Image (cartoon, rainbow, N blue to C red; front, side):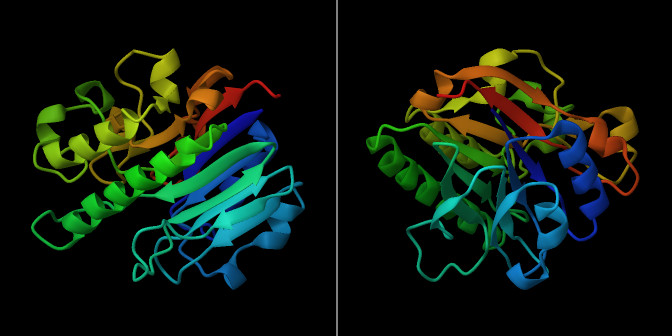
Length: 257
């Protein structure tokens, strides 16, 4: 089974591309971020016509996450535990194809001198705590999304340009490692150690044509899921389509039980 994640940067603006990619790549599960719409405005009918069940946590103008699956979805959470006052639509978790999946949109955190950076760190701390709970169930799960984390130098085109940025700060890396060291697998790095593989290219400065990208979209696997990992990839083609998202889909393939 193929599980993919994609920050579409407005599901309504990107609907033609989304439908095309669902048709061409046909993932079993697709985790979406940055929908930028409420649940009622989500293009449900068009996506259902492609054979997908849908679960959405929406928000007007900003954020928003969803799970699309060819199998029924049993939703468990529509917010990340740990802060009952956090109203931003950044997390949805459910069960499908006998695998637990979550679509996650970690805060960007910039500018770092504002309250946006402490919010990012707090969100990652909450995610760390929740992962500990999930691991205690000893089941296969995949946590996919836009993590807004550049894990290492090889995950960005010019590391020096990112010094001090919220995506690359030491505090961000520390929180990332805390999550990974619980026992999760960065699926892409489990199969590919090369530098220069990216999932995001800024709209500005000709970044796409110059391949000045960063890898910030990740699929993290529990041990039970990692044992079933067959293949991984980043599909760059949608980034080159007309009116693209600045992100492109990242996917992994698991053996079915």
